Image (cartoon, rainbow, N blue to C red):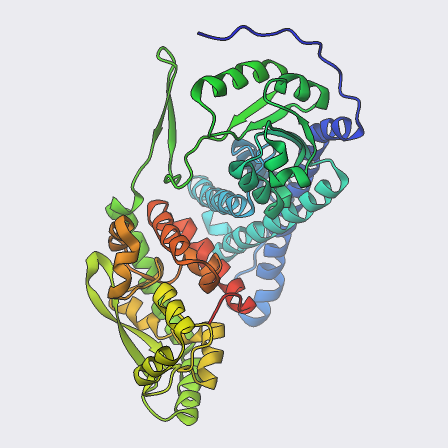
Length: 493
């Protein structure tokens, strides 16, 4: 039964933040839209300049190319704006990489649409393919950069800030607060917390406590906030429903964070049965689809072959440095567990002394603390086996470059779970079945999430999360994040 709604005196918000943020609801989208228009227009002009002015200087056979101003200032920009509006990009508050994904798709759709329209209107011969490709590239780069910068400015001025109240201050609320801090461009500003056990919650040291569950609606009304997040998955169903029914009449948006941490989210679909008042969540196993496996394997093969050719001089230089500093084999092959539990030789540049096993056994026998560390993590922070050049290779992850050959052979992937040895299988427990579904990767969720600074249980959960939430875009993002992590050198040893 629906609990009766209490009628409360609604106070009009009179604080500066609330009024300013309300103004931003209308002003900020208009500013972002104008920036998008300018970004696309400059992208088209850049593409035209490169194709019509710069490239003909070096490629004299290129025909003369002109474009009507109506395409530059109207057709191209407004086509992009329509797609951006359709995707809700002027109201949604999305994390950076989700924004990048959507804009990538929009640029691709617009370019494809331009080609199709030019073909059916008979103007394909008059439009340069290089111009279309350059327009796609610069539209993507300019839109991402301009949107990121303008949102930073709008957040700083308060126009892109959305004041919110979080009901609950436990672990779930801590995760939300950290996410908002890590993604400042989301613009969420926590102005208050509703919590009963506020004395025991660490968030209470950082945010204002405005009330308890019993008077939640009055506390929210007094705050003047129109966006509330209920983050109390530990509450009983009846208590949760009571909170929702009491709060909802007084706010514009009410978000409920369910206790579904760890559940696969990629391609999750929400369905509702109104008569039964039921919500259903449908999840797809992406890695069970043949087209996804073919896409991932094709991308791995093309990228690894291209990468091997490009870095061949670096490869030879490292090999020479290893041999000169510590004569012996340049590449080391260690047996690792691959897809479906099959063993394969995982290649690495040798970063240890030749008699590494003997050195390790002697060191562990003399150092009980090191033995405990080894048995727990299968790694040592101060490993006596590592050579001087090997220490550098590990810090920069250059020791893993030979794994490109594993990718070419089909034993590994560019992105995937960390390759493990047979003794680690028992540590994976029931999650080992997720590991067996895919090829281990040169990089992955664990490698960009802290590397060796992350405890082993968290590594296992990261590997499982990656497999259950795989998408091609996620692989691209993890590859890009890997570059940043490698240069930072954090957690590598």
